[in-house]
Image (tube, rainbow, N blue to C red; front, side, top):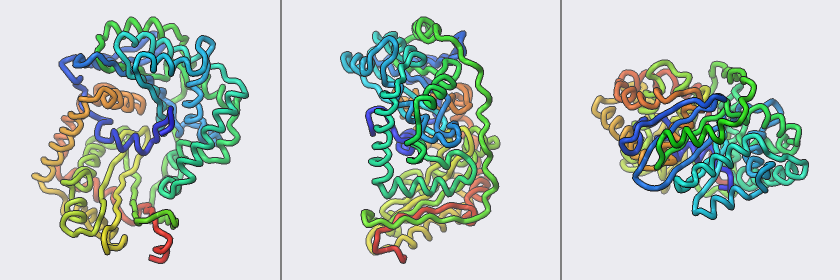
Length: 451
């Protein structure tokens, strides 16, 4: 991870179980949300167990919102937000946080960009002041643009171009998505990143970095009245920006083919595969479908109690790893993934065949009531455990609100999970996990090119 970037895939995997979690605060504090006069939404999550506060600003702008030909501008601008403003020199914000023993970071996703600090409660007002300042007062010179552009180009070389797995992931995404902008990498395509300039950056800044396009999340040892007073004093002074049009993106056409992407590389020692399907997200699904997909992923490959782990790793002993995941918190349609790699003398084809067989078994026979109830218990319990971390709580709310959800959606999520039936889990497997309508990526060692 670079100083100011968390990579989408790792961020999603880390918080996948928490992104739509329960709305209760980590103690008996009540979650509060309100709007500032300029349209900025604020959520306060009290947690008085320790004198710490997590402060996050989520902008409803990600790589999937970028203009054609300007891929990488959202991530690029994440970097630029750490430069000088009319009120603070470059690096002053970071130094102020380090001086009080705090931490800060930022990350860019397909659907949002977020900036966060963890500090003592007494420093919350100072954090708000710094964040509000850089929301509108950045100094973007040609020298600043060139220097930071070189940084992101090197970041792409080191993080993507030098990693066979990352290169394959990009190619799989570009194949899975035929029309939707999720097919474009968050960091951008190299040839387009090289052309990003000051005009692009200023236009992007002026359009999206506005209070009415942002969500403030404050979790920790704070009271809502205090947060509201500080927010009005800092963010509330910023002028509301022009109303943005709805985030309507190209619609994915019906998928009706099976596609494969293969990368063979001498640096790969153990072969692996992943198969993905386009499925609805929590925002786009019919009632109950996303919850059923969440539980399907949990039952099929969510951990060491899952079918894939028990069958392939424990009983058959053919897989070193095997699992499934559903990336539910997205603005548009999303993906459901199964994956695996062999161990011992087993071949990759053995693992893939066994994974496909488990997917087909659920589509044919469904899941048992006992299996479903245990999966619900594991899944909801894992999300409840996430409440012990302020940053997980902040991520739950920020990612949901930045992708069209609201606090009520989070509050009601556990009950919706509990209501999912075995028939609904089987139905989403039948409807969406069709092998003839999937995209599979193979990562192979050099000597296995013919296998």
